[in-house]
Image 1 (cartoon, rainbow, N blue to C red):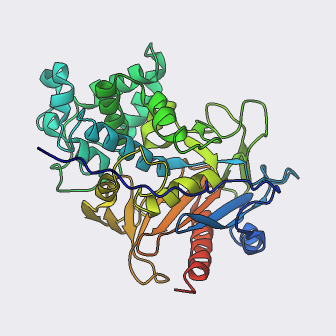
Image 2: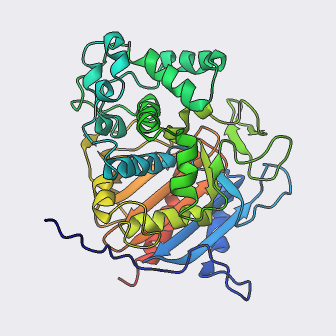
Length: 392
């Protein structure tokens, strides 16, 4: 007979808590962020530091639209990009703990009705391979772009459209032997989302709200573009055009990736809500909320699967090791590898840096894509990390 041990969970103050006096916990670091607006050509940038579950620093500077005087606020929503993959991996962990999936559940197991149409080897592709970008399936190529365009003609909800994308994708031959090669794969995460939808009976879009947003009290979190149609009520995404000019994008069909790719990253939230999520991961899931997954599952999600040579695109992992929605990156300003992920839809950029040994999380977001912005965010990460660890 197995004796069930009570789970230990440390209750802490919410990291985005507003104190009764109206003063937020921690200290503002706007003065640290201001120089990066110019050096990084950033419309706006937000950052926060969480040290052992406590918000110690936070700040946001700049404008919602380049060239306009519309100051950002600390509660403004920024786009999360592929940093949302870790949330999908966590939901997968929930399904595993509930006995609905296994790490080695295959596409053939979950979608037996499609076995006859699957290309050789595809039916044996596992959930873990999809979440670690080692499935060997075709990645972000012209075929995926065509499927996303064609999906607009598919009737039904987003989960129906994901199933259709899955059905079309499993017909394609593998481009590598599973677990033997790594390729950043938004298609794979979308298919993993379809697996979660099949076993849970709910759309991924419902689950991310019920299983992540609500229990973590991420009140600013949502799906799709951070601003609403016809309004500049959040930082607009920006791109640097070939002529060097910066273009902003109002909410609309070209402002974000297709919502079908939700499991791969179409989320938005404030820097304080992102700090809550990152701080929970830094503590290995031992702090509130306690009913997400066991700390052992968080550790598994963070555990490296494959050593990679990064694509070096902003929003994708650089060289290091990849886990499940997280990577491990070596930088010259930290004494050992840090848990990391970057996210971008090309018009926004977000980074999460976690030192699990010291239980420190640093989150940074901006409303513009590109290499210059990525370099600026890395500069901010270095400055904040060195300040946060100076007393250790």
